[in-house]
Image (tube, rainbow, N blue to C red; front, side, top):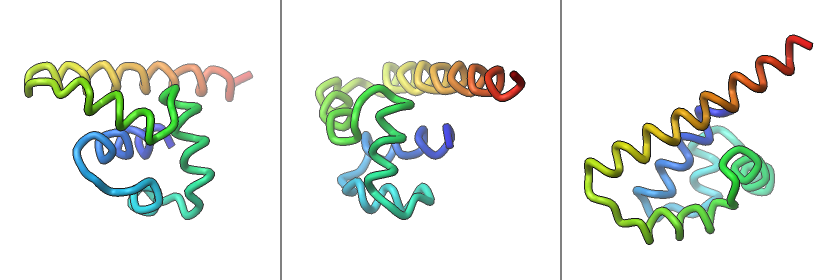
Length: 87
């Protein structure tokens, strides 16, 4: 699920696709479920995330750093989830 949300974040930043279309592209059939999951993992609903990402309008080098930070955040969430699953 984490990788799906990472892909969704990239699509929100780089395309004009709506939440329904992005949900379908990442394999989630119901947009409400997609929005809740996205917010739980990334801390903001899809529309707000898109607005924040577009306000940054970063040069390519800074975008690469942003994507790296996003991957690290998602990796941390995945490790936490794996630790909880072991309990």
